[in-house]
Length: 89
Image 1 (cartoon, rainbow, N blue to C red):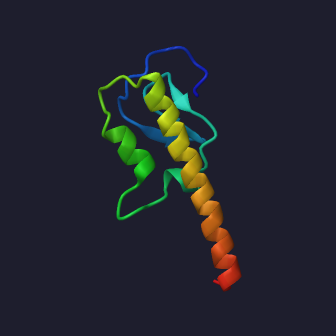
Image 2 (cartoon, rainbow, N blue to C red):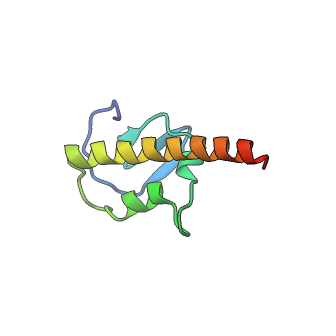
């Protein structure tokens, strides 16, 4: 969860220096660039999830859900790398 006080309104999500900013004051920290840039079916789920909630205030459950998405994608990328290593790709 982001450590700075402020509101949870999703304005214009952007990624900078391992932080996913939802507005000028609030962010999710320690998000690897490969998670932010990860594609599934032609879209980037980490970005799309926030864009679908633009101009809305995230509640506690939504913040927790988004953090789970970040973790799931991070683990997915790690598993894919292991599979590629076994396959010799």
